Image (cartoon, rainbow, N blue to C red; front, side):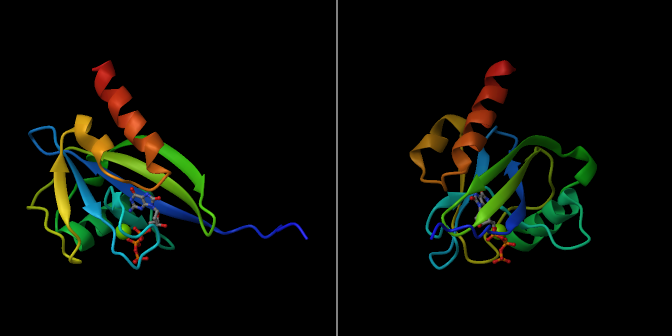
Length: 141
Ligand SMILES: Nc1nc2c([nH]c(=O)n2[C@H]2C[C@H](O)[C@@H](COP(=O)(O)OP(=O)(O)OP(=O)(O)O)O2)c(=O)[nH]1
Ligand SMILES: [Mg+2]
């Protein structure tokens, strides 16, 4: 019988955080998590009653201990992707102003990388479109 079940789509607020040297922050997902062991742009699920920017502000504080201004974030791209076990809507925002020093508050390894080096890291499949959008945006400048 064909599988007609539809996975619920998880709305995720994702931050592409730049520092003053033009590097981007990536974090490694915990082994046991969905898409575990791969690198990601920090962020997490939008909770009930939150706007995506409110979720981003909360997640970047919880995961990294940095503060952002929601009115200074610029949307980069929205990506809908179906993994075999989960559908996600990645709502991706550019963050180039923040206060605090990013640390892996959940024990996750962090790395600041220049955009041209992003392709050297392994990301979930849905991230290919995010990386393309980052590189295209920089080329247009
Ligand atoms: N944060 C983030 N999630 C991503 C990326 N690419 C990608 O496919 N995902 C997927 C993996 C997960 O299924 C989902 C995000 O969930 P999450 O684990 O970050 O959510 P969360 O921070 O709220 O974590 P938790 O409280 O549920 O543990 O989106 C990415 O670059 N960043
Ligand atoms: Mg997360």
